[in-house]
Amino acid sequence: MSEDMSKAAKPTLITLALSAAAVLGYVAYRLTFDEARMAPVAETGSPAHEQLPDELPEFSLTNLDGEQQSIRSWLGEPLVINFWATWCAPCRREIPMLKAFQDANPELEVVGIAVETLDDVRPFADEIGGFNYPILIGRTEAVNAAASFGVEFYALPFTIFTDGEGRTLGVRSGELHQEHLDDYLAVLADLEAGRITVAGARARIASVM
Image (cartoon, rainbow, N blue to C red; front, side, top):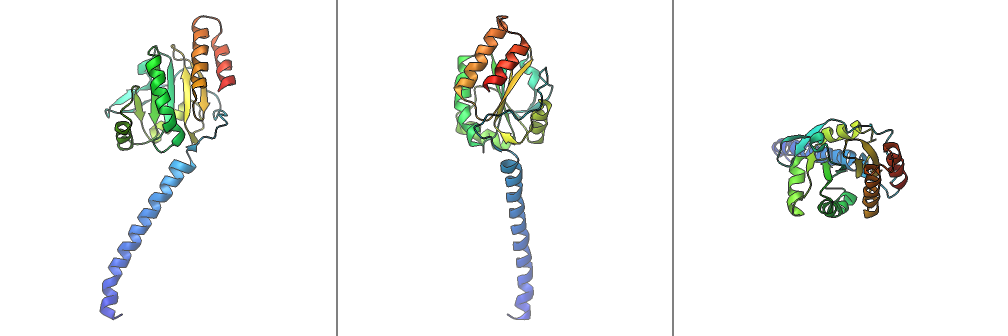
């Protein structure tokens, strides 16, 4: 190769090297943030938390309309707060069940918290025909929201359960199944009827989740 050709090739090689570095950096980011730190939870269902707070904590995240909304917007209703992501296969499997559960139980509210960006979630919502329950969205903000529940944020999905007075009752780490939702409804019914205390409700949730 002549000296002139060699000089002309150098800028091209530098550009290719920088492009390759950028691609590799992005791949490493996705692997580290999405899959290593938040890999889908195994089917053990073992709780990944130290201690839930007694009351629903205060935090706000972006909703599907791009507006900030507080998790306490639904005080007065029992909540099923489901942390999920579009890339998480168990999370995606839960969504049709959660939509059916919301339809069947309008007296409570399912709230999905997507650990992603609005640009990730909106196309997915269109793909599945929309959600019939509210979705809140954030990356670091959603991780901080999980921390406010005392949850060790290493994997998805996980779900927090509250009663109608904003008291936290328990957490399910791993994929939800219909029996978990049925158990939650039974605990709520007993709590509201005065057959068990809040402490008893928490013990029941812990034993079945």
